[in-house]
Length: 453
Image 1 (cartoon, helix red, strand yellow):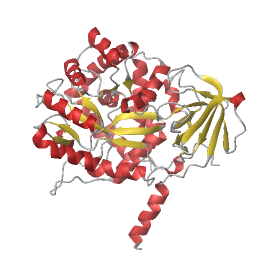
Image 2 (cartoon, rainbow, N blue to C red):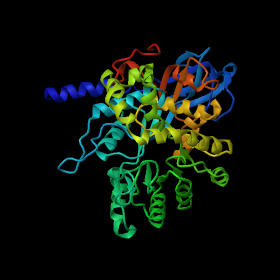
Image 3 (tube, one colour):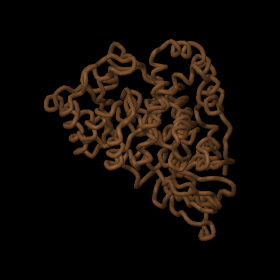
């Protein structure tokens, strides 16, 4: 064995998560199950291996062997989920051979920041395959400490369409079907993303739009292969067309203008889930006007000092000069109102950030609260609704017997204030308690938050 391969083996051993330690019993916790129901005091949750075995009032808990965690004064909720990320680490431009250079250290640090923030599942909805397929495979093989990763790999659009740098460019369904077949076989997308936006709004010029009938054909084809779909849209008319073309979900809320009452009623009637993605647009003016957020503990852990200095410096000044920054500041409250109206009517919002860090998820929670959405509903948006977005609500997203044991133990009540979701005592993914001291965070090593067994 070479010295280099030996070092790589040591690194992977350090990153790999420990196997679940048999049975874990959370006793006397206040349970916030992710469904939107009121918090239940003095409950017990039994985790056996990767799954939840029992949820019961603590007084009815049978004698159970295993590790017992006293949850008095603590709150147990499902792991948070982000259904719209673009993982950092791939070069924007291809090299001479057409491939994209990848920095897996950057990617691993970003993934670690999600786990540190209590996010146990992420969905990458457009990235270079060289990056995202490798980290997804490594996560599933248990080689890296990371949230559960689902991914589209390449997305699909028309040549010159929105985000075509990450896309398969499709012009004719029959002629290009081999490209679709290869995408399905080689990349095995967990969900397909298409983009349907001619832009021409804000500071953006007009670009080509994916033909509607072609989008319908592609959606139908992927659904026939058992793959759900999401479509990038930004206005009400395109959202309506995507829904009636058969998309399972929308990758964004309507941001270009206030939604109509009829659209709100339709979203409630159709129950088409959509990702919230408020944080991405708000992040530009936030950095310009309130860079002090970078000193919050989650950001200090998740970004290196050099990264935070660069954000405060050159990036902040570049954003200050951009028209897009101020257009998005103007429209973010409109988008918040649109989301709040649909949620109030019974529509299905799911938390997404359009970013690549755990702290962004908590900012999304704050912006949903600023929209006037009640905390219990926000928790559902970040947990069970996110699982519904993925079609995986039978397996994830709430605390119930038989579901994956993705859990966060908190020292304060998030159903009273979603800001309390930062008060993390313990993160569990698939029955394994995360040791934060082993996370390769960009901000450096962090102490373990829960005592080792």
